[in-house]
Length: 398
Ligand SMILES: *Cc1c(COP(=O)(O)O)cnc(C)c1O
Image (tube, protein in one colour):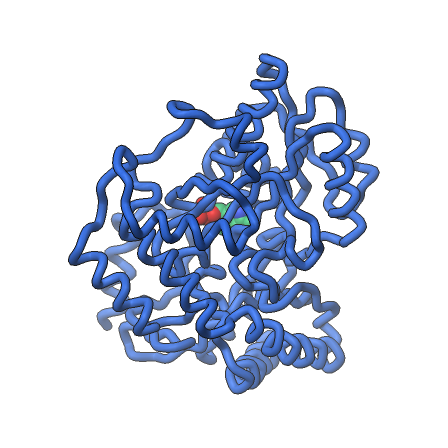
């Protein structure tokens, strides 16, 4: 079979850093993916919360094709119009004042950390500032992003990691307070923890952290790379808490498939942090990704996608709650909007593998959580189809 040949070739040449599922994905249509054997899969992973618009959105594809023919890349030594539009739309949607475009989420985190360090350095000229991050967090795989990622397994082989980083317990305000001192320059967290197991920040916790930050001129960095871009039923998850960060990171669904991230900040932070020469990127914010990001914001508005997420996620929550009722090994549901997790007492990896055989793509989070991050354009019928397929997987695995 062709598939086996493809996979053999992959395993000979591609560095083995992922244990991949044994399918070769070939094309997408709506909320479905097809592999090279023409098997059809309902996609409840969206390329890890990237493909908010699903696959084959004509307006988006046409915008990209148009930009390919016009201009792909110019460097940041000149202005380009698509990224100017993208920046304006991202600032409007995020209530931030200044944005820097990157090529990935991890790079957005790097930029956010550099901004916070520079802000503190401008104040006192010292370089020994500390950052508080959260246990079970995930911020990416580069050395800087790893330094604030609260997962010992990911970090250990690569230590020492840069900077002085202390880890507090997520949703435990006292554990944060215990770490704050005169050297603390930033507190970084995901508004809704993704990889760690789909844990939304509690309102009191986020409000408490914000208060600590305001009182001590510490910068609050909210990582919205997974939970942002409409996924939780607001454009950015922090908007549902009414608590604004000083710096925000974004990536994943920002480009809906084109590799692009961003870190954005308030004017006050911009005025006292990165200056010409302090940060840069060759590709970041080129006309191609600019066209993608700009069109993504247009489509979000035209389709009123954030409202759609509110409606459809209520239905998804209802259906997932029914699974908690029905199956003794499904012990809890957590999440916001179309970022949901089911906690299982049976191995989640087995369920995910079995679901694939029944034509459902679904991923895991943490050690025991099934993660639901579908395209934002799903409809009720897709939720029903997902539940039907998931039940078959449960039947195989119980
Ligand atoms: C995926 C993710 C990242 C890293 O993004 P990459 O594009 O993989 O570098 C950082 N933070 C969160 C919350 C993520 O989900």
